[in-house]
Length: 401
Ligand SMILES: Cc1ncc(COP(=O)(O)O)c(C=O)c1O
View 1 (tube, rainbow, N blue to C red):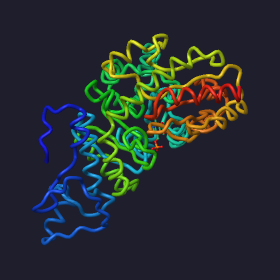
View 2 (view 1 turned 90 degrees about the vertical axis):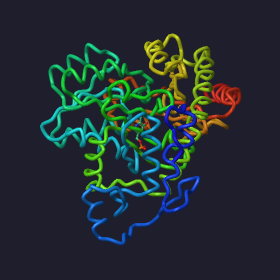
View 3 (view 1 turned 60 degrees about the vertical axis):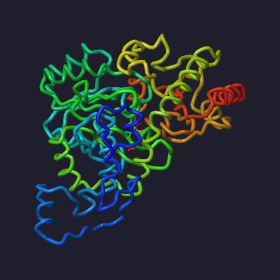
View 4 (view 1 turned 180 degrees about the horizontal axis):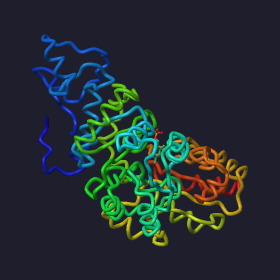
């Protein structure tokens, strides 16, 4: 394997996880291993692998070589001891919460402003199973501390940059608070990507990605991954043997391939999002723009500090003045370059209406409490030329609004 010690992020993005020799030769790019069985000369070897006293593969629900390469790559990029991959980001979140020990009778404090399915997983499924879930605005540290002090949660959970309102969590302060109260801190780092921010270095226990987004990056693969300690990885491994939300070798290969261009893509996406946010902020038909890169954003300085001035992310959201769902739909239909698809983090610029898609599972009053109105549009900047993205938004706003 290439020695990556002391190498920069871009170099590690290209080489991490690759070149584990399967025999007496070394493939430059990790192959796709679509087998369900693995043969050993000695059954004692198989037995040792089952017992986890020896590394190796017995059955792909337990682990497989292409998936291991992807896990090694993301563990490296997040600066973590180990990683475990899943078939989706939601599976990663679900199993990470189980690994943190969330069960009937335990308590969780989580950000109010979370991806809709995460919100519903916690607030409905885990709550129905007997966990107590308290949702708070994580940008209000006093409110978080009050909730943590009162409920003594097993786990605190937030998104580094929230979906869809782009609030930035003070990860070092939240880690410190979680530690002080004996809670484990889980952070969904999907929007920041490992290029902008590494939460483990700031004390997080579990870092979660929907690798469907920036890590995969090309809109062609669904995957999730959790980066954590070797000890926590063993818990994820044991749980997923039972849950069975396994990443396939073809998907792992695509996701690993995505890692290589992550810094190039995210740099361009951050630059494009910054241009679009500035342009939208000056548009007469736009009432509000949520983007951490704008100086008026409440966590602008925090974001600059956390992300080391490398950028402020590729996603923004904006409120079209006085627009209802029908108006927003006409605007999205009028777009000719930007794609109205239900995802983010791709090379293509994408727009989405959170109230009817990513946050559809929330009741009207829940969406109102979070602050997701009918006129809110989320935009994920692609890697096209910013001037072309802006021209498309301009013509669509002029035609539809
Ligand atoms: C921040 C965030 N976390 C998790 C997920 C879930 O990931 P997946 O769709 O890969 O299950 C999403 C999906 O949009 C997301 O935006």
